[in-house]
Image (cartoon, rainbow, N blue to C red):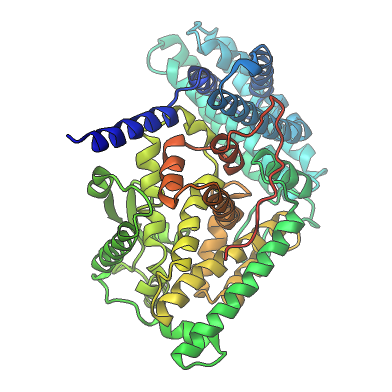
Length: 565
């Protein structure tokens, strides 16, 4: 081996060791998550005073533990982990307090359970219950619920959200009671003989009680605007706090303004592509042309494979990032079920790419909407979003580098990274035909619309139906696909900031990329380093890469550029 080549390898190894530095806080992060998991599996009645008080104490104890750490003595990696862990605690504690306050508003509906709850607690250590006494307690609780239901009829909750919380309290208790009952039933003859019938009666009554509470709200509270999509707006204060906790130093109003500006840029570019296709300024007609470029049923997997190969070749020819051979070898491909397509009308990705395309049992119109919405030109910018160098590479690398940072997952890092690659590829003239350009722009404008409709929904300024109409009229979605997108945004487990995180996270990565290039880094150096540092807010990644000053009470302050060209 030549001396020059050996020197290059040594320098590369030293650089690798520097970036792979293990923080002193790595084990502490793992311990926190293990403690959290242990408590979560123990206190399963998650709508109870016991649960809220125990987790309040848990976060308080850990905050004291963090305060005892000598922050100044930590390395930059350690300081980053300290800030990330403290932020994670603050985030969980904040939303716990929000939920606890909502719980206190309705905890009276659980008065019937006061005498039963000790049975649930004592079951954790297998204490033999006084079965005859417990049977009478369950019998009495059934009667109490009957009178409570009559009482609550005369005083409906102020809104449907409060009614939902009340119902959740009863369902949570029902789950805990069922778990305790099943522990003894069939194993303890005395328990089985006494408790079986009173439990069955109470369990049936609990189901009726929860259903009653869920619908017992003021007539002035609108639950369904006619779309059939029911979400829970969190309000401006919670939005602002959520943004700060995710290290986004902008207000909802500022983010909406940015999205509207980017929306207009996309619309102007779509008109340019429309003119190339001969449709003049009528970009909607041009989009209709693109939608009809779908492939026949049965041929979508091959179309996706062709798009994947094309994008990987494009990226590797320009040496933009290291794509490990094993990552290219081990990603999978699955087909999405018709049921899942109701909330995910477009393909998804991660460890596998999950293809959304019609199945035989789907209605004719739904088949056409699925095919039109997943045409190859619409898929052109998103195969790499889901696979390499997007989500699949993220999963691959975070499983192998600083995996202890998994709890610091956030959508701005996850979705932002994949969206960032759409920006990069557009700027490198990845789309060559006007159809490909419209495909990329369709998704770019869609991400702008997501910011607008998700924030305005949570601010109480848009209804789900208005969100659907925006996607159909201003973005060009098929109606069923727009409906599924809005349902996905507001009725699943996605957090309130998830939909805005695509574009805003992408803009953060793009701004950081530009800063690092000005400092002499290559694009490949930047991209490779991001992938070995693990999950974290992009602002904290910036502080790590640039060795910026950090303090134990660090707050968001990076006003990243919102330009992507």
